[in-house]
Length: 210
Length: 210
DNA sequence: ATTTAGATACCTGAATTCAGGTATTTTCCA
DNA sequence: TGGAAAATACCTGAATTCAGGTATCTAAAT
Image 1: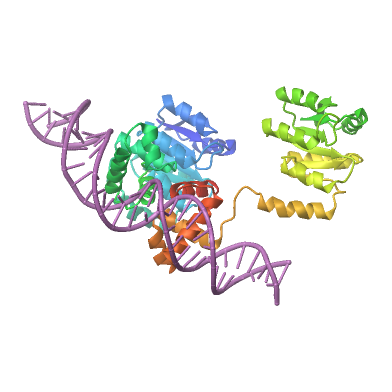
Image 2: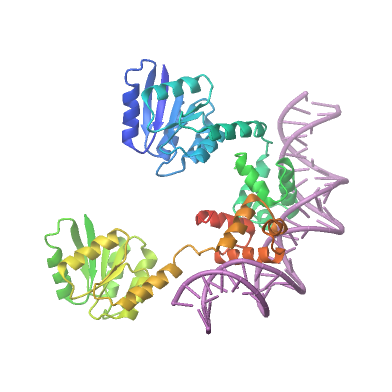
């Protein structure tokens, strides 16, 4: 029996999916959420096999939520739901640990196929996903293979840089020498092969480090 | 149900407004004040949907009062009430966070229209407001609108900065002098009140400029 | 017990950015 | 056609970042 959790602020969508799955014997909708926070709460104590996640939620970005869920939970398969065929969003979703995506106007057998695919460890992209998306992801997936690890302290510095603080300001905030901040910055720039702080931040974001 | 609070030293005005709204099902007059201090006291603990504010009060300037109310309370919509069509006062009121103004000799449906407009986030200016006022406000509203405009060229620079290029690299790419790039960067930093490129990018993103 | 990774701190010199101007030329619109 | 806005370019000095090190200390891992 597969457990499914639906996160979507439109009750109609959840209802429609429930209807589609009504007489599929092997799945069970274990709950629904209409906001990101509700979902986060529920998922603290539950690990559904599959999470259907609306990308456009009222209280937070669906991509962000995908990140948050993935951080705590490597088990569940996450399938994004979108109304538009937004290639940029799709690739971002996949980078953040999503396992597939569906258009909300999908048909029943497309949903079943997606469930089957992700449960078997594959990625499911809506039929509507154009070739470009697939290509794009293929080229990227090799590149992002090994993300250079970043240490705790380095990440602290990184986040403060992202906030717009400069070296000395960060040093003051972390009670360390400006030299140390520079060292951390330098090490990260080396790890991510960046030649400026802007590049560092950009690459860190691409690598989902922040 | 919309709650309305009336600040006017003439009981007749409050009475007249009450009469006008008597059989409008969706509004409810939650109270009235005849002095500024009385109003301030009441509004400490209450947040009506709409405040009708007489500009000429016995104990204080209505504009001042508008300021005071707005400082504590961003929620309520404030509609100024005047007996004269004083364009200078009107614009000042709008600058201080007012949401509209009405002449005291308004008709019932004008009041209802004003309520409807401000509740929906719009500005209501009395029909009697002369053209000049409208023009004046129109020209100002764009100027003081939240997002400082960014020019085409500035945006080009901004996007390249976001890509992680530095000043000289951008200069080369755009076939302009590094000095010019710096000027554009500097101007944008000033517009967005940023003290570093990172901050500039951060704020630009927040303002949806990129 | 020794190595390894992480965090810390320091140094120097070159490059870049920041903050404060000024000034000229285009371009566009009233 | 005469301004206003935008784009261009330049200058200076101070601050910060970048790139290249070295070095010490601690905690975890082998």
